Image 1 (tube, one colour):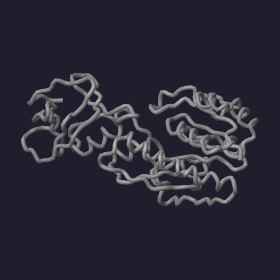
Image 2 (cartoon, rainbow, N blue to C red; image 1 turned 90 degrees about the vertical axis):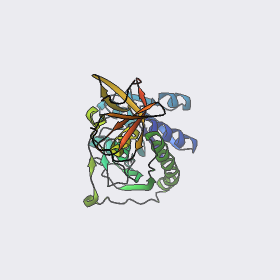
Image 3 (cartoon, helix red, strand yellow; image 1 turned 45 degrees about the horizontal axis):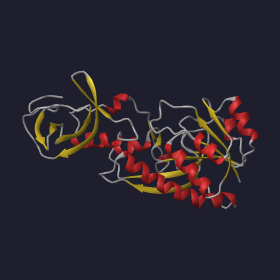
Image 4 (cartoon, rainbow, N blue to C red; image 1 turned 180 degrees about the vertical axis):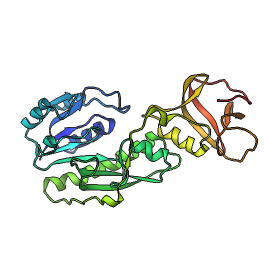
Length: 293
């Protein structure tokens, strides 16, 4: 089974390396030249060169030039793991077996953008790893393989990213032989159970101390590495908040954003509900009790 591979993020790299290691017939790799939008961007040309696989870097995956290059490889199927832009009809129809995509949620729930960030920011206890046959919609095609992935309260974005990757790589090893032998199932998504997450903006990463301490904690861990980090504003400067700790307890008489104490040399800041110890921030802050952020 001749596989054309499309991807441009860290998961794309891991999945590609895994496919090569288990003997998949990768006949070509299509990747992005660069990406300012993806903080987990990965350049797949290194793997392509090392494995002697034809590779093309593109700005527009649906361009005539890209389609001509991919069509010449005569793929039986396309794997598109880690590509945020929609594929056009000509590309979706290029391979006889279609295009298999990946989305780290339990589709049809939580389609759309930034699924790992949203899952953590919203405090979900579970997400998923789903491989599906791509169609003209966004994350709406028939499901090929799906596994649940638990989320712990202590999970950072890196921990959850890695856990989803581990589950997904196991799935690839399971469904690849099924695709090769033409012994697989397609499960239609239940449209009534579908929802879509929107693209996040810089404003979504700003800490408002009127939020609950839990909401701030979830936001900080959601935007931790490999993502760009949550931000707070102090003296007209953006401060990247890297780690916080929830300090429970009702405190009357102090406004959100006020430094009300110190723990191990780190400021404790009053929130809308409970408080937050600002464990790590960059650049560092010299805050005293009674200061406001």
